[in-house]
Length: 94
Figure 1 (cartoon, rainbow, N blue to C red):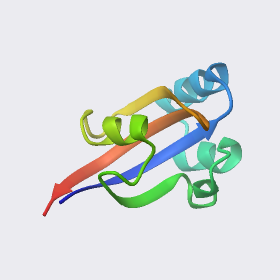
Figure 2 (spheres, rainbow, N blue to C red; figure 1 turned 180 degrees about the vertical axis):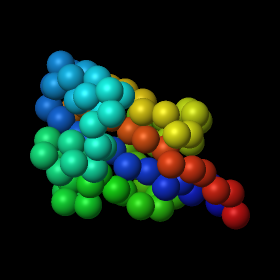
Figure 3 (cartoon, helix red, strand yellow; figure 1 turned 60 degrees about the vertical axis):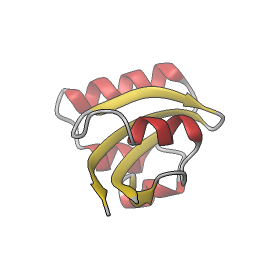
């Protein structure tokens, strides 16, 4: 079984996502940005989704989480909920 430790930020528009990504890449704290701007309920935990199993997330995010590089800030990625910035902390296989 594949699982991953993931955190993300969800916002309504691409421009905001790009602005937040630039701030994080310039050194801003991911968790603080998530708490201030993310519309996902994970915002209260600094964007932490915790351990997720393959198939638990919306398809476009699930595909990213289980195929893209770890320890990189990905996005903006569009889903039916808005635009996501996603960080894959690490993946595990049981």
